[in-house]
Image (tube, rainbow, N blue to C red; front, side, top):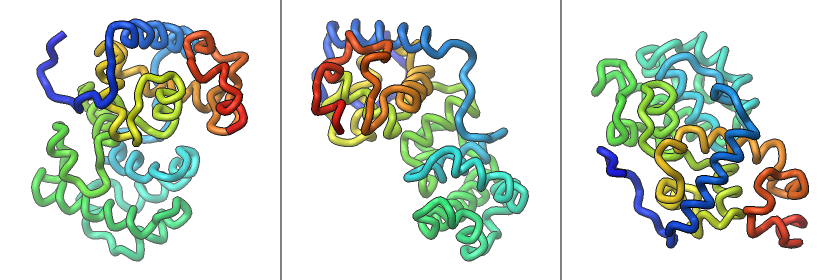
Length: 232
């Protein structure tokens, strides 16, 4: 299938066997977590989406969701956030860790959006990647959730851990794994696979104590029989 946009190249060997296994993985996860997709972070528009996802680095979605109501009340749009003082934003996001960098990135993002995009979050990958604190994971989520544009697979720590255990990628970092997953999974599965893998990671495929015996993918997972994985 030829797509009318570019995405990262695979860094691992992804052939028909891996693609067939990925298709089965997507089918089983969709059955395990049926229904419409509900984002884990709370946002209602592109501006809120960028802020929420950018803040989610190195912390939990629940922690971010606790901060967002106050943040959005104080700075309801990019124009307001662009005028905020660094110390004010730091105070608001202090509980999330790396708060100085996160506050600096949020303010920088807002200024660029106001100066270069008329206060509106841009709707292209290249433009989003210009914004401080926005890498491909964030950009993929913003494009999909705010604009209905699926341009890749958002790879967070859950997705990367599960993809690695399933041997869908040999990439050394989550960012580098995106190209492998985009090649392994059919385009029709790109949107759901992030949500479904996160759901699996939270409920079953834990980083330290994976529940392999009850995992719907255990017979497809090369790591399921490895005592080293179970004892991580």
